[in-house]
Amino acid sequence: MEYLVPYVLEWMNMLVRWLHVITGIAWIGASFYFVWLDNSLRAPAPGSDLARKGVAGELWAVHGGGFYNPQKYLVAPAELPDELHWFKWEAYATWLSGFALLIVVYWLNARAMMVDRGVADLSAWQAIGIGAASLVAGWIVYDLLCRSKLGRHDLAFGVAIFALLVGAAWVLTHFLSGRAAYIHVGAMIGTIMVANVAMVIIPGQRRMVEAMRAGRKPDPVYGIRGKQRSVHNNYFTLPVLFIMISNHFAMTYRHPHAWAVLGTVMAAGVFIRHFFNLRHKGRVEWIYPAIGVALLLGLAVALAPPRPSVAAEAVPFSRVETIVRQRCVSCHAAHPAQPGFASAPAGVMLDDARGIAQNAPRIYQQAVQLKAMPLANLTNMTDAERAELAAWYQSGAKTP
Image (tube, rainbow, N blue to C red; front, side, top):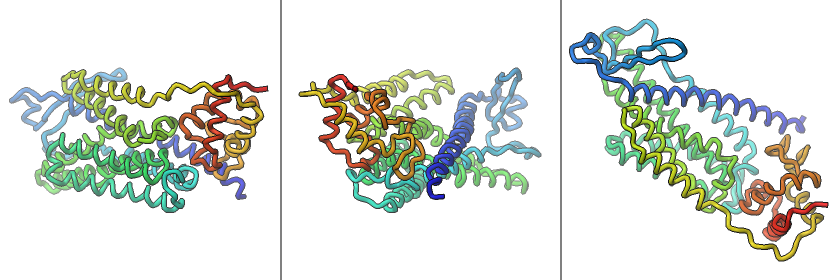
């Protein structure tokens, strides 16, 4: 039955990843909607019925053939309604599915996915321990900063949290593979986001509801804290979404300064998100998306590969085929021999001449330019072999 383990893990990967995307859409969609709603509310006229009811703002909207009239109270309505909808399971399900995915993809295959001997000579368990500790430490430091005096100053706090995340990326890239470092920064952000919901927003809302049921006026401080954490979560969304897809783009996590690359992308995401948040309030300030786009364009230029040097002499395909068979085919084959793989990663199969020819540009990019493959260099491809692959590709990638 041991031969079925990679196949079972691949099914778990697929199903949990699917679930994670579905729940993530639900959570982030709710976050975007409520921040938009909060920023779009308009205060009722003084002395109006709504103002006397304690409504802080309202709006009218049309969607799906119907009209809607959401209202937000300054603290709470005079009477608690019989039915009250809570928004929490989207967050919990997203984090639980994401954590399960982290275990299935990274922790259960830590030797291939997390350990990079060129970065740090760690055991699989040491790598997992560092990754797990980063999730806990990230929440503790973030929460302490929120509760400190710094948490009262939005801009200074935002700069401090950005520095925390970039610093975490810098530390992790010195212990884990770039791919694993990125995903653990994302998991750290996701943990902060769900902890905000589970440990601040929902408990505060429960206390407000309990106060109303007991006939007391709710303390507005719980609403203020919840709103603050909700806004933080909103700014985290674009960075964490990039990290979710970053494993497909080795040009980012394989860079010698991968932590700085990630910091630049995260900063661009925050500026772009800030533009939309301001726009919901009626302020259109194009400087913020312009900064975000400029950061991404500058990064694209900085990451561009150098012009390849002209190969001194062509390398015969027989030699290329030997290198690929020795270093790549254990994973990139119809039936991979590498433990942990039930099928060829990304569907790329290099176990015959046709497959090598079809994927010549990918081989050159991943094995030569980025040195992202073989994964964690498990098969010990040498720099001399990478140079031979480069010479073959630059001379036309000829096959028999």
